[in-house]
Each structure stands twice: as structure tokens, then as C-alpha cells.
Length: 512
Image (cartoon, rainbow, N blue to C red):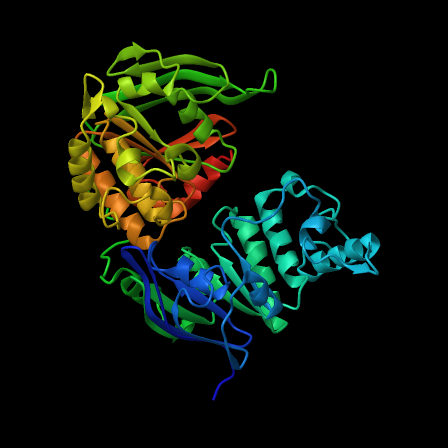
């Protein structure tokens, strides 16, 4: 019998009105990277919380066999003492403490009640060298640096070093590359490969299937709270993985439809935006473009290219002073606030749905109607029955996975939260919808559904502008593509002539 460090046997977990896990079972071999893959809402996060002690024994049924024996963890501390470390998608670092203080928080090295600062500092440096971040020739992370001053990629490395500060045997990572650049993600994957070679077992959760295919030894599919299948990676082609995840075969990852460009809807001319804090610096400079009904206009570019700043300014939410003209249906409009934008039929779906798109403590119904309450009230009295009826119907059309419109948005998966943001947009009946990173951090099934919604909006005469860092998405769904570099438009391509190489050349400011 092969040596397994973890066996999950028939784990079930329910919340009021929701069966999150239903007899989930799988085994993890010692020293492997085991990927857990599934759509948003499949139950992955709930399962991880069971494994990490967030949901203690007694709140779920089934058994966990860890390191050769049945374990019934009642606290997170018990899990950590057993050698299991969890790195969640939302990092748990203290931004106002140094790197070494974060690594040893709650497990300070001391002797006779006196903290040994020198030893903790030295061990921090050793841990950073161990994971390949620091070495003799180049200092990348200062152990004394405040964590809040580090980029998100380096913060992720600090989380790993923090886990390794204990005698970790099983490292669980939940969407560790969701907020990382491609380069940062490559560094992280290399670190995990090194940890595997040193005998540390990893459970890896990611929506990025290319990463899964690169790094995993074994893959388990979770769907609708059930463990569907476990296979070695070499026996799990990407197409099979997607089909098992969504329970159906997707004919194409990108459901492109033939669109016909029609009416000129939005025209931006000589548009520039000043940096809100740095004098004489422009984040957007002399940008001009046109957007039409009947097309999906894609915007791509590297981080810092100015895409988000451009559309945040057009929408009235960016602090930097803007000059230039905004024309809607060939008539000039003046937008100073989001309310002005909404009144002119423009809706922006932010790249950060949790911070700018939703109130997580409010229900689906309350979030969806928040920007269109005037349509659900008369003489200042809210028609709640109309609210419930329309949001329930829209949730059904968008396939939001929730029992009813009164479910709190904070309990939904990322993909379903994104659909609620789209509900809010659609209830405003926009003429122009700007989608900033519309599928970031959500699974392939939810992505497909959002792409289908985009096609439906085009059919209804809505102008769709999509900002995305995903090259495949831009090429897969756009009818026309504009690239930005250093605050300027650096290229324009019809989809028939666009290639990844051409887009990358333009996005990096190079000519072919």
C-alpha cells in the first residue's frame, strides 16, 4: 500500500440551506503536489477550512486520517502543531509588523522569558534563503522591512517562510497566484517544486489550469460538494478536467459569436489624466478611441499601462484631474461622478469586486438594486416585492448559485459574487458596460457563463468594453483590441489580424 500522508473519508459539511460538502473522499501521497480543482462554489474552500481547523471536529461528519492515524482537530493550533500549514487566498499577515515579526508571531523564540531577537532575525534570513528568495548575491527581502511595504508577490513568499518556521509536513495553498504577476507566479511555482523535492507535501488549489498541469502530480476534481474523480496528472487532459469540473463539455473556452459593428456609441478624444499625487506626471496621456454597439472592444496591456486609470477617470471615480473630451452618441458629456456616468448609461464593473462592487454584509437583492433603487420605489417607498421578483429572475438567468435573493453576498463564491455585480449593472439598463478584469479569480465554468452574458448584451445593443490581463481571454472574446503602454494607446488590431506576439509587442512599447 502506498504511503499516504492524508486520507479524507466521506467528509460532509452543511450550512443553513446549503450542503457544502457531501461525502468527499480522496487520498494525498506523501511528498507530492496534489491539486484540488473545481468551479467556484464547488466546496473547495469549505474543505480547506475543515483540513485547517477553521471548521472543528463536530461541525462536520466523516474522518480525517493524517500521518497514519485518525485526527479530530478542534482548534487551528492543533492543526499547526500536527505539521499542517494553510496559506489562504486572503493573506493573514500584519502589514505594520516587520517580516521577521510576522514569521514568528505567536511562536517567538525565547529563553527564560526573554525574547531572542537575534536568533529570530537570523532564522528569518535562513528561511528566506531556503525558499530561494534571498541568496548571497542578491538581497530581495529585508527581514526588518514592514510587510505592508512589500509587493503582494513578496508577501506570499513571507507567508510560505512563516509556514516553514514550524515543522511543516503538509502545506495547503488556496489560490496562491491569484494576485501575482506571471513572473511572480513562476517564482512561487519553482519554490513549491523545491519544497516537493525536499519531502514537503502540498495541496494546491487554483483556477489557473495551466499551473495545475505544470506543477501537480495528482488532481482531484470537486463539483457541487462531491469528490468526482482523482487521477494522476498524466491521465487528466485539460479537456477532461474542464468537463469533470463543470459536469458538461464546453465546446469552446471562449464562446465567440459573430458581431456586427453598428452605431458609434462612445468617442474619447485627446484624453489625459494627471497623477493624483505626483505633480506633472500623467497616468493617461493623449488617448483617443471609439467604441461601437455590436462589438466587444478589448483593452490589454501590462500592469501600470493605465487601462484602469483611464476608465476609472471616464467613470468619475479617479482623483487625478482629467482633460479631453467624452462624446456619447456624438454629443459631448461631462462626467464628474459615478452618478453622472450612470445617468448617461455608463456602468463600470470594477476589477476589485469586494472593495468597489459589493457590500458583502448585504443580500443579493440589496446589492443588485443598490444603484437602481429609483426603479424600485415610488414616493420614497421601496417596493420590496418587485425587488425580490426581478433579482430572483435575473439570478436564475445568470445561474447564480444561491437558494434565494436574500442570501448574504459574503457567503457566495467569487464567481457568483461577480454575477451579482453584473446583476447590479444589468438592472441599470446600461448603454455601455465597462468590464475591468471580469473573470479574475473565478473558475472556467463561471467564466464561460460570463462570456455568454457578454454575447447576450451585444445582441441587446449594449456596447461592451473589456479590460483584461488574460491574453487568451482578450483574443478569445474581443472583436477589436486596443493595447496600452505607459498611459498611451500603443496599438489597434482587428481580431482577424491579432496574435499574441503582436499584442505583446504593442503592450511593451516595441515595434515589430
